[in-house]
Image 1 (cartoon, one colour):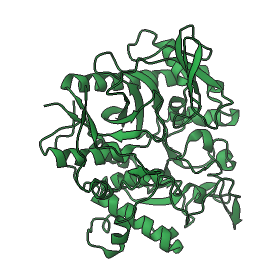
Image 2 (cartoon, one colour; image 1 turned 30 degrees about the horizontal axis):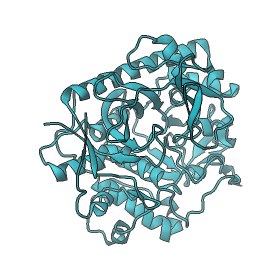
Image 3 (cartoon, rainbow over the protein chains, first blue to last red; image 1 turned 180 degrees about the horizontal axis):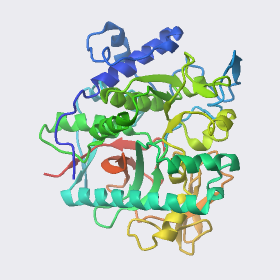
Image 4 (cartoon, one colour; image 1 turned 60 degrees about the vertical axis):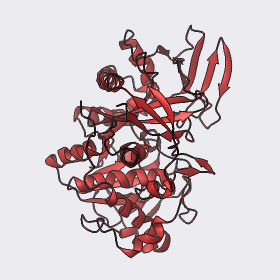
Length: 96
Length: 376
């Protein structure tokens, strides 16, 4: 049987930074939709952009500024249509 | 198996937020509750691990049976989608994880309540938060928990076959979902994969290329979605899924396991398993049973029937059914509380546990997550 008997490796410092950074972008910079990660910049504790985020607490049902809701109409630009998934989204988790 | 009470760590909120658990308190109620923990012996952990691996194998066998006999109607799968489910199974498409919910008292065999095989959450809490709680409490303490390492190993295994960027989709307006997906994305990054995030509503369909695309118009080759198949297959883009080139994670065959419709089939095939409760599509001929909607989520529309009377019922949007009936599991109270063991499967193997605790026998989305450790 394998049980965890050691420290985690990168131990989620990466995840925390990643998550917090994304919250930051999402709330304050909607142009950050195109934000794409690489494997380097999550491992830095000291990046100031994350600091305010780490001090905040969020409710499970999320951020009022996001504005996602059910029944989003699909939209087309050129040959690409978006919004064909997500119409069942509610204020509740998609998880189980 | 013991339930012990503790003083929470000083400034515990900051301690869990440090690792991404921003939803430790909801509507003023504690969700992450470290004033309590459960202690397990090595034997008890071995039992949980064995039950989990056995159940997973029985589930895979039952999926094959469903595919062979094309029992898709039991799962409300639209006809046009059936072949996609079959293909995802026959191609052995990559499955990352799942979580069995088990009733366990430390004495009798664990009993399967349901299998959250498609979009399980409470992952960060189980994989990471409870581990650091333990390390703060007892540096030498141990836990039944290799979830994090196994996730990374699973991604590495997938990367051997293909190094395509993996897109991660969730509903970013729900912080629990978003954090779960970002945690998984972190494990994929640690495995060396290139990743990208977009909201499920931002997924595009390019009719010229006949592919799903991201915000840059690039083809989505692989997509981890924290969005249930039973929703996806009824939405506008569902008609494109069978023709698209995207490999979805979890794959479509996992929806067969995430539906409560699997429970009567499992019982039919394994009536003597100590881990499986009697279940049926019709009311059971037993005094105490639970009625569950086949695609219910987070404890909604659960009806507990004792001696023929409904003694408890939760509200929700699934009241129209269809339903299955499962014999009421013998739940043991610990100091007046009922724990449910969330037993994680990563890449097909038992990987650790998380515990949700409630003061009633129905676990809901507000049920507290409590940590555990191995007894010395």
